[in-house]
Image (cartoon, rainbow over all chains, first blue to last red):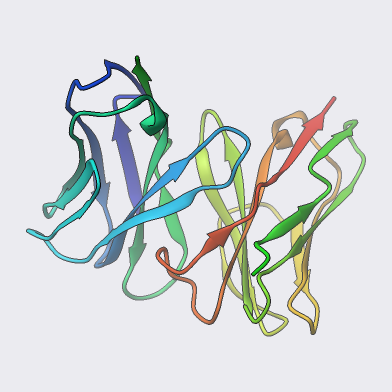
Length: 111
Length: 114
């Protein structure tokens, strides 16, 4: 069965303090790995898709990378508005098309 | 373009009751998926409907069921509610296929079971 584990559960950073969030996964053939951002009281919002090991995607202060077993979401010089829960999900490339999510990392950026 | 809407936003029920949640997808979207989100388990896939047919299913008991109408609107029903069913129920729509990068999520329905 597909599994996704995210760490840490919660992370508090000072504004400008860079760090990384981890997503470890096992899946029977990876169709895609997805990162989302979820703000309180809202549904998840799509950030990135990664398809194969070695791939990287960037958007503003965020950069997502992928290996065969894990993905990292690097946040560079974060701002308070980057505070949110970041979710990782995988989708297998055959069989059931359902997405399997991790429990998320709650990121707080302190001004 | 209007986003995914879910009604009601908040709901309080007691054990043993049943509940129906509604989801209106983005106009033109034909796939609707449902998820349960709890602090301990995170987001878990319930099922996906496409053109009024259940196309994918997660690992939830038969108390959880859904349907989709010809206008792509979807409803989810939970019968014989248990305390553990308290959660945020999210609906997501996409144009055709179920894929992580083409789903748009609604704000969710917060269900509390007392």
